[in-house]
Every structure is written in C-alpha cells, then in structure tokens.
Length: 239
Image 1 (tube, rainbow, N blue to C red):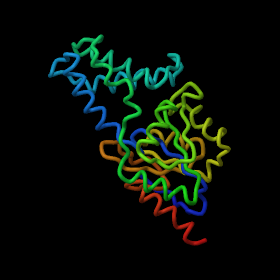
Image 2 (tube, one colour):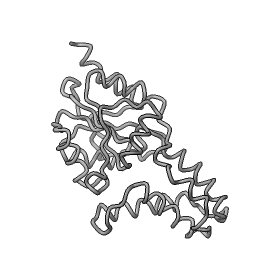
Image 3 (cartoon, helix red, strand yellow):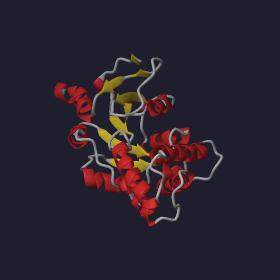
C-alpha cells in the first residue's frame, strides 16, 4: 500500500461510506444470524451467516452488472436471509425472519464516529453515501448522533456501489470537486472506485474489514474518524 501526500488545505469536503465505516454491521449480523438460526430451525452445523452474506453480495452484484433490477437494500437483505435459511435447511417462512426487517436501521456506530464527525463539520462539508436506504440512514444518524450535512442513498439512482453511477450521483447532486473531496471508507474496493472518479481517498481501518493490497494507493490511512478529524483539523488551526 502506497500513501499519496495530502495537504489538508486542499480538502473542502469529506464523503463517508456508512455501513462498515461509520457503523458496525458485522457484530449486528452475527448476533441476528445466531438468533435467526435458532428461530428458523437451521442446522447448528450450517454457517447461516456466511450463506446470508454471500447471497446478499451476489444479489447486489447482479444489480451493479445490470443482470437484475434494482430493489431496496432492505428488501435484498430480507430476501437473502430467506434464501440462506432455506439453503441451510431451515424454515424460510419462519416468523424469526422478522428479525431482519429493520436490520439496516439498528447498527451501532463506532465510538469515534459521533465526536469525529462533529469535529469535521466545524470546518468542512460532511456527507454520507451509502447503499443503504435513505430512511435507514436517517435513523442511523438519529440513533448514533452522526453529524453530517446530508446523507445520500444510491437507491436514488437505482444501483449500488461500486457502480460508477453511484459516485457520479454524489458528485453531481452536491456539486463536488472530487479533487478537493476526501472519500473515506473501510472498504478498499469502495476507495478504488471512488479514486477512478478523481476523489482523494482515506482508508479507515475497522476490525474485520478487508485490508488494502500492496498495490493500493490512498491519500490517508487512519485508525478511526477522530484521527481523520485531527489530521484535517490542521487547516482550521492555521487560519
């Protein structure tokens, strides 16, 4: 992994990925998968969580590739859970599937997110761009005291990241200059796609997330959002 020198004075806005970067989805999915397995009668030896995650990724990739029509993220999460339950020997009609109905609205934020986003907003535009549905993003912000000026859902353009249309939507909707905008995410694939549209990039290291490859080139690598706010805060201090 290579770092590209970044001048904090050249950053006017920060765009965050949300699920995984600002909120912890992994712990929630693991807990719900355990409860779902019991409630739906899934064989204890079956890996329901892996099947569920893989099924969701397959459905989202089909949308991005143009092989399937777009559906709301919440619907894909529920449908994927149902398919995973069936494929692992459980009851796909079980009432236990109600556990996943509002999953995207229930993720807890990482501890650094509330203070970190609040600090960033004092000097910069702060935006969330997510594959999650817009109502879920509003509830996540309310629940977790996330400070952003606006959150955008890729559902507005009927696709999911890393479809190029998702990044163009953010640029056009907010009249962003990508060269002066830092795209922050815990997912290297997201940062690679953002960089193709001219965004500067910040990798936020989160537990359990994919790690960058040796060929990745980012502007910033930080442990959390507070560290990013500290780094970018240098501009405000010089004013």
